[in-house]
Image 1: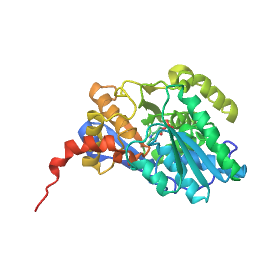
Image 2: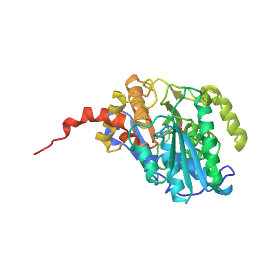
Image 3: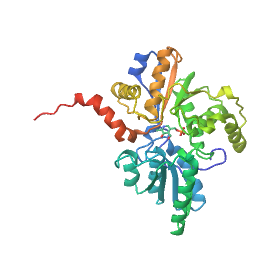
Image 4: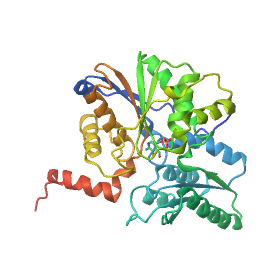
Length: 342
Ligand SMILES: Cc1ncc(COP(=O)(O)O)c(C=O)c1O
């Protein structure tokens, strides 16, 4: 029971907290990685911790189906499909997006796990209006078939979802303490802000010695980020937190978004290759690769000082590397290392 809420425990927690010796030596910092990419369902990732809490709520409401929203390659959609499959529920994922031209990456995995994917071409109206319209019609269609539909917002980022990362903050703090890491800062990619807000509340409320820096992966400033103090206030009220925060306490770096969400970008590909070649850990090109590229820049710029202790949260997203637009760019750079013999 966390802050008065139960969850369905389906993850093998804690995920490992590992030291990265080679990258640490080369960067002159102490770099640790929290392996939330190793959560054990549907290829893993951060959304599963949120889904432990959301699934409990769905079950309590007697739901037979999970309905969620996102882009065509949503990691959250894929993990919602995995949870639905494991717990014998139906799943539908509504996307305001074009068909990416092939059934690959997350979209392929969604279908492998039995989820219906509904792609709605963006017609230029506010995305939320389009999502609401299509989700309402999909919900009505399934309800007419007798399903009890439980709706989950984009990224699973609501008051219940963030509990997954409140709990993760406790987990990292305990692991860091055991490993003798006290004055470290946790860095995490920020999308729909749920992960960041959960970590922020968990670290603060539990009086963790760890700092927190979010790395924005999109130049689009989420409405929640603009109202982050209000957002925190509502979470504080809901759960009766005793900690306080002012605007300056929320540290989200916005200089490393590389101009657009999920764009194929050389610096991100270089960061993904660097981690893969030095530590054998695969980052994704949309979130973790971009956040790590930001960390590399911050080290170069001196924003992260030599000797600093950094814990990088690996939030998953691996299938993104197989999306066509990223694959094509990687192929151009990496094909020269493939030798084809007659
Ligand atoms: C792999 C990955 N990392 C990080 C994030 C960001 O998490 P949040 O949306 O909670 O900010 C996401 C969100 O989709 C994700 O898929």
